[in-house]
Image (cartoon, rainbow over all chains, first blue to last red; front, side, top):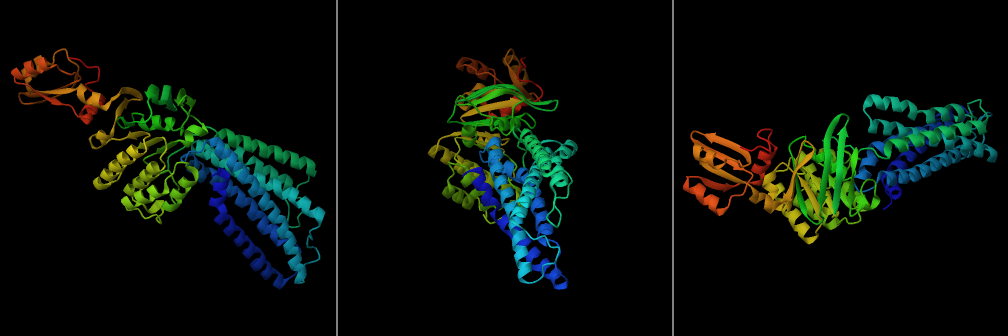
Length: 227
Length: 293
């Protein structure tokens, strides 16, 4: 089985449970509670699911190194095969979550409208808006995942103090993406840099984070598990 | 053929493996012996590509081993710590090995779990030290990897479980010949399995020989201290013990029948040197291997 295939089989229950929790907690419970009091003038989905998605991906990046790297290498997979397979897995995850966030916003919009709970200022999603939102969510999600992986790789490879130093570099992709491409509860870019420049800078930072991750992992010693 | 040339493993300023050269023909069971901190695990980690050597090359059938998918897929290295996530269930470990190992034998793994009385529903965190070792053995043997490396995988296992392990190892090796490298401190217990023995000390190869040759290379001469002293003059002495007027000297030397007869006429007796005794003598800090009276 390929690394990507194995990762999806490992993460399948985790993905299902995480998505179910976000879906149930966000759409069914929180939104229901808030809309019972007042109409919604912002997107609860973007606030909660949007944040949950990027932090979830950050954690996935950390876990991929902390838990899965050794698991694969001790079963005969090279580090480069792992990096390639995990890269494809990560790409699909990032795309999936980004699309889910945008689609969820649309579903929330339709549901609020159906129940008459949509406020006047609610950021109704248009086709163009969906693309803009995807253009923001996607690089942010990728940056968070890469940051998680790079930070974790630093701690895996080095001693804690060196890992802390590497962590500062590893967090750059997430920080840059958040500042330049982060979106608010109205689905608008929070930063003031024009989108093309913000996207280019964010992708550059994410690319450097990916390069750092590759350098840290490509020949790292596989540490034994704690006895 | 597995070829190691000038393999060096360093941890900062500490040299764990110091320029080791070895040629290991495949299809044999090797015993890798060495004292604590002698560099066994570091050498095996390099051999299994778990760690890149600071210097030197490792080639398997002519191909560089490090990060070589074809070589790594054919290599299974089981360390004394079970390399898994503590939250994983035993069943999940075996399933995962089945996904990734082309030569994995699930039926054999199930049989071994029964043999060692391991509940596959248990999590790694709830296994005892011996049970973790047994799971490592299951992973190592059922992988049927052409190069299987078992590094002190007996830790915590009771005598019955260890005997079962040795029996299974030999049976499975005979049924599915492959290269097996066993690192162990329980030398006498497992010595009969070894076809070749490698002894390393302070990161260097002290000895690499066929087990049968090794068994016959030493002799213990016992008798009156003075007669023993006279007999062993000029011979390479591995160790010496004295009690009262009786002395026992272990020699790295094989006497001829005439020399044995001469010694016996002087009241001396000659005995074989066990692999463990030889190992102890070779790796004790004093007298050293090179010592000669």
